[in-house]
Image 1 (cartoon, rainbow, N blue to C red):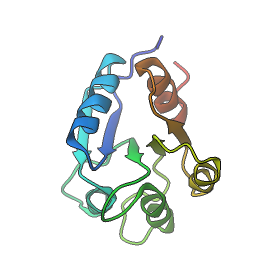
Image 2 (tube, rainbow, N blue to C red):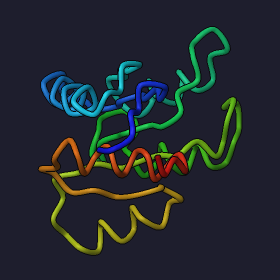
Image 3 (cartoon, rainbow, N blue to C red):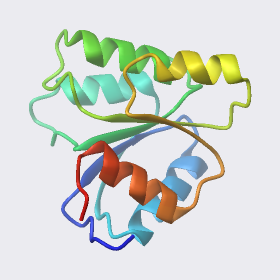
Image 4 (cartoon, rainbow, N blue to C red):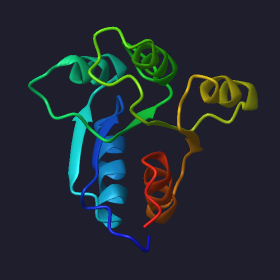
Length: 135
């Protein structure tokens, strides 16, 4: 990643603590320092509705989560009911291999649907692209 992304804040929503830690590490490798975590899509949605919490620049969420999956999270955010920002870029990250499921996920208004595993450089490029930062 050529340009520093230290000004970007990211909310990572994944049901697995270990995966959130991995994603955090990838983001830190590209200079992202402001990283918040949510245990699932419902927690991420509540975060976006809470005026007391910082509004992230980007959300990275797993496709398959308990409570609210990545597709439903994206749909609920895009509807805008109760959220502070309905057009926040959402990157769906998944280990899913079914092309139909990936296509459906891409139709939710997500900025990108990325398959695991992913490198820090590729994730950084997608975050930069999602926020319109060309460096």
